[in-house]
Amino acid sequence: MQESKKMRFAVKVAYVGFNYNGYQRQKHTQNTIESKIIDALKRSNYISSLPESKLQAASRTDKGVSAIGQVIAFSTDKSKIYLGKINHYLPSDIRAWAYTAVDNDFNPRKQAYLKHYVYILHNEEINDFQRIKEVADILKGEHDFKNLYIRDKRKVITKIKIDKIDVVKNNSFILVHFFAERFLYGQIRKIISLMLMYDKHKISDTQILKILSGKCIRINIPPADSKRLILLDVFFHNLKFNPSKTIIKKFIQKLTLSYIDHLMKSKVLLEMKHEISKNLEKSFF
Image (cartoon, rainbow, N blue to C red; front, side):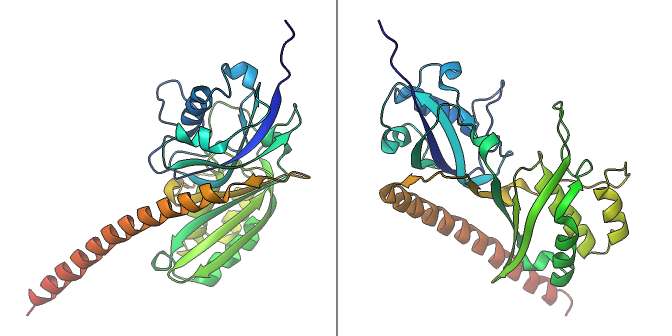
């Protein structure tokens, strides 16, 4: 019997990463984005075996990190894919929302020419907005980020070019946009901590230049909170995705309801803060 020819598809996936242990599948837990995607692809009969499917992702986002434009690719016996069928088997906070057919050797991690992340800060965390912009200018360009990523067993090239870092005020928030072909594990979160240290005069521009030279340092730079980081998009040459407006609208509704829920919880905490502050003031009179 002649073996059926496989098709390969790239799919854009959005997810709220708060409750997951990162994107990449792990030995000791099924609570990862990739594990949920594998399960959905198997149950919807798009793949049967991982080696045959050559499932790959553009980015292995950390625990707690969310995404709008994560891109996965897999090979299948099917000539068409239906995003709704895949989403039927996914949790409601993970959604496949666009797709395109690609070459059989397409690898979203290796063929992406640019990745766009955003990190969210609150105005009250910042002393001097201009200092945040200053340090962003120092950090962009090509540097050795050996001191600014979370090391693991993998051997990686630590010299990386950050094409652009945009720092934007948005009402009560400051959005820090990062653009580069690739990022190291935990790199953006360590950069954010470094920026906050510089803002609070805990580190000088001379020390930052030493850190970026790749020389050994004794300064502790812990990674910032992963739940504030979003993978916004991944860019490829000559690749046009077909989005599903229906899926996007339904996911927006889901995000809106979740936002209102979190907003109300924040309001409760704010009211408690105000009331306890008033009681504290009364105790002095």
